[in-house]
Image 1 (cartoon, one colour):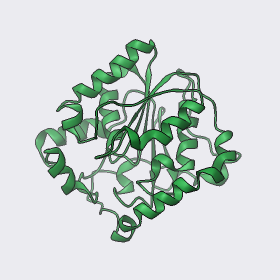
Image 2: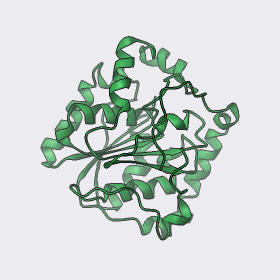
Image 3: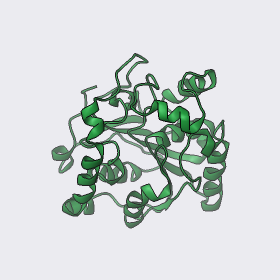
Length: 263
């Protein structure tokens, strides 16, 4: 099974993968109707709240397809309500604004909250899970570079300009060190080896009793509309709160998802 990559200097994705991100993402979105039979077989939810966190520079509109699917599956999906994801400008230097949002849903619903974070949103989800584990049911990340070098992406310079946060700053490094280890709640990292934005090696979880990785085929920008991702997210969210198990590649899943163990 894939395990987390050490903090070594892996390279960002190739220019070819980066340049083909948009057409590949559009293809994944347009292919959703063809995947309807598979998605219809995805496990149903128990109604617990799920907050979906958008990726870098995107907002809640980017997660609409994923949230709509989760609602149809029987969950209570929520937006993050913090505007565009501009790092600390959106969530606060220590994530205090996002923590307040999660606690509000937790207290209003009376149930632990699952967090599904896309790219930078997943990095933030892990931070929140470390800070307020009592309010978190589980964390699912989609192409989130929570380990390795923060420069192993094709957008780190844009990140510094738009967020005002230096990736080599001491406080940034401290948060990355905190986030890289598995959170104290069940966690699943979904990643693609053909990711054109971030190095997939840095998106893999350290496998343990309550942590796992799921590889999918697709782009980075299409993770939120990728049928395999939608199915995997529904499968993970359907795990009982006190009886979490790793992803099983049986039945239809054996045809769709690559076998584990290729880190």
